[in-house]
Image (cartoon, rainbow, N blue to C red; front, side):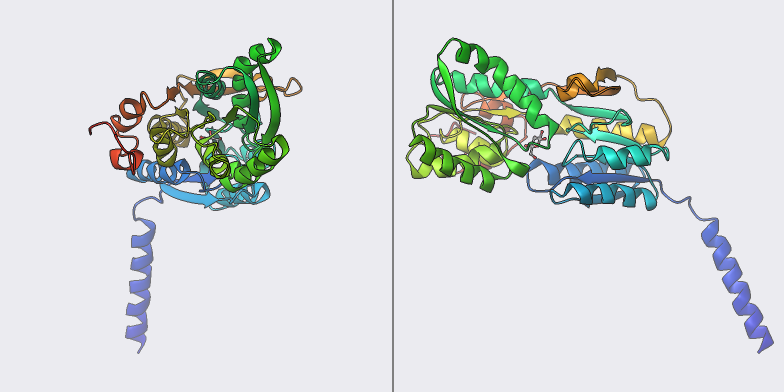
Length: 349
Ligand code: BGC
């Protein structure tokens, strides 16, 4: 009996020694998403997870379902679970600064991915040139119709990008407004960038204006397609130009069918590996090369914000019916079948 006990104990001791001498625990990197409703986010989650796992990291993923408070809790929770680096897509750039400031004090590095987190304590902010997104949207619409009654549909008001995009749109529209050529007859922001909200807003705009508008500057494909659903009922789809953003499969298909006039292609296949490379460098406590400091006041269009953050911005490409095949399909970003689904006279593959 005593012998059996001795052997059992010996086995436990040896086993625990083996466990404690085993491979070192993997470092953890957190991914914090505002939502998975827009086409791009699940793709970027999958791509980031793969790159980081292949590089030997444990990946924690959280989605806040458009709940800013929940996203703050999730960030803190990932840190409790041991994450030392977090890549975050903020639901609300103001609100998320709360948890980011708190975890930064513990040495945790947060990369603001695509959307700014309004804190000088972020390790980096990497995105596309969002002002240029807005310029390209307005230019695309104005190329079809450069005068008359215009409708503005902004993105989610809590997303800093929505405001940068709007400033780019206004760079193009303001001179036309000043010249008396363009009149803004409706100006709305689409909460959560939700297509269903955009559809409802457009229904109200159609009622309020009696459908008397000539162009719509919308801020992404999802909201533009929501608005187009309402416009279709009144026979305005394909007649009134409208802009989008993201070169989504449905957006590009709408372009090919002649309903959406313009989208803006932002190649997340470049942004994702860049973010992962930075996260890995931060995990190894290495410096990140190639960043430029920008003032928070400039990034937020708000002079009361102080401090600077290291940034990098990628270029964007305007996409219309004329170049959707070469830019989006031939580069492999969207499939030919998806973009030209139910499109008569599609160009050859
Ligand atoms: C992104 C867009 C996206 C939108 C809605 C913005 O911050 O830059 O690409 O369409 O959020 O998710």
